[in-house]
Image (cartoon, rainbow, N blue to C red; front, top):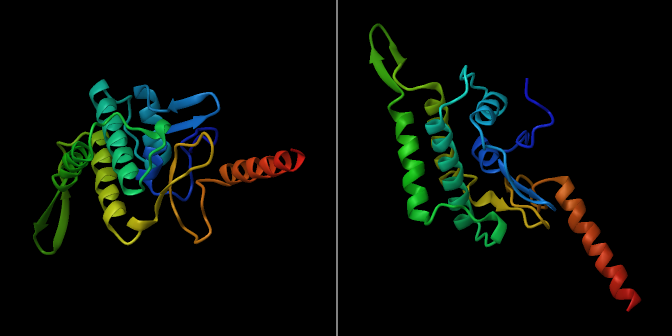
Length: 197
C-alpha cells in the first residue's frame, strides 16, 4: 500500500516523471527523496510496485539517482527548462542519454524469446530486482521522450517548483492544483499591490 504522505506519490504521471520528481522544492529549498537505500526501496514498492525485499545496495541507490538525474537533464533539454533549482548534476545531455541507454539495455537482456510448442517469454534470473526495475523505468522513459506524448512533457514554472509533468489537458500549465493556486494567488497579490501605488 503506497504511503499517502510520501512526496513521490503523484498519481497520473508516468513512472519516469515520478522518478524525476523525487527532486522537489518548497520555500525551504530543493529536496531529494532518494537519499537512502530505504527511501529507494519504499519508492520502488510504492510507485513501481516492485518488492525488492531488503534495502538496495549503495551501488543500486547510486544507479537509481544517476538514472533520475539523467532523466531530469534530458527533460530540462526537451522542455527548455532553465530554472536554476531544477539543474541536474549530469554534465551534458549526451552523458544523460548514454546513462539512460545503458540502463535501458538491461531491459533488453532481462528476457529471451523461447520457442517450444508455443512462443514464450523466459525471464533471465541474473538481473537483480532493483536493476530490472530501473531498466524498465529507463525503457519507459525512452518511450515517453520519443513516443506520442513526447511533446507533452513540461516543466512546472510555478514559484519554488522544480517538478515535471505530462500535459494531459490543453489548459494545464502546472504540475498540480497547488502550484496553479500559488501562481493565481501571486498574480492576484501583484494586481492588488499595483492598484494601491
